Image (cartoon, rainbow, N blue to C red; front, side, top):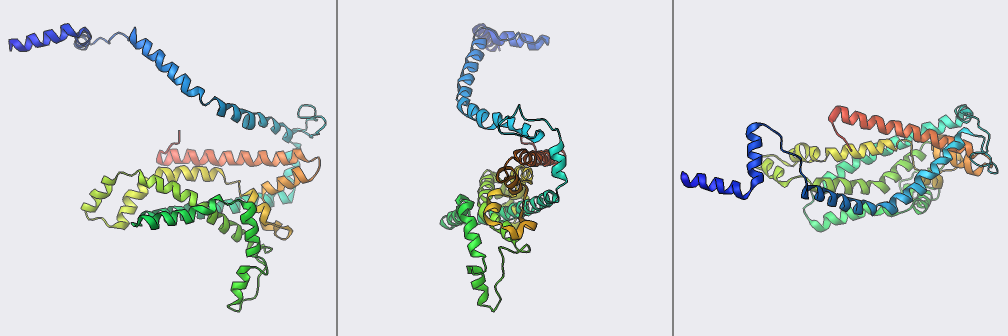
Length: 339
């Protein structure tokens, strides 16, 4: 016992900070704040962080130049914009541009088309990407698994300038699809100029093009699930369906919520490039969206820049409201947060 006391006393003599901490714990007093080397270490860490953050400076400068500074153009939505007078010389009209815009019947038709097309794109892309990601995850042959991912992801890299014209030729009156239908004795249909079929073609082609990206995202989320959970469930006798419902889906739920929030934020983006390449005068009733309307009014009609800007600002405000509401709902109901 005497040797034990001597060992403790020697340790305290060698390490005075330990003895001070023990005395502070015994008396209930808080230890003094660190000084000397600790302060210097924090100073060094601050310098390291400053160096790392300075690497972001080029990207921040580019973002400010190309994303923040152009926001000045929003002022055109409240002016009778004149190119010769500029942003700050054009006459101010307040909300008159929005009042004139809301009185146009084609504006509300374009708004309805935008929401309908974007909604079905989000629904089919989200549901099919989750289902296909779960099915691909069950493939055990590595070569086949990678081949399927590549085939599904490849259309994502095609531009709508190319893909849109392919769709127009494919579904034209003399296109390949009507030629295939003729084998069964079905008369050719004007798909690409039909208000009944145009939205279907737009939604289906967009889902085919973009679904591969979300599949890759969900597969990456699945790989982060702890394999021990699957092993424990298999020991308890769980089958593939139970593993999917009780481990895989809850494991990627945070990613599903994140992608859903981002998709809902794009509810007013129905695909400007796609619609612009594929639509025509015959399908304005069901195919004209806010982006194409802003393009026609703001760029093709001389002197109407303020109206095109008003359409863009309206679309951005509605998108921001949808994004905020979906984020708030996900946080309040399930406690999911992005930041």
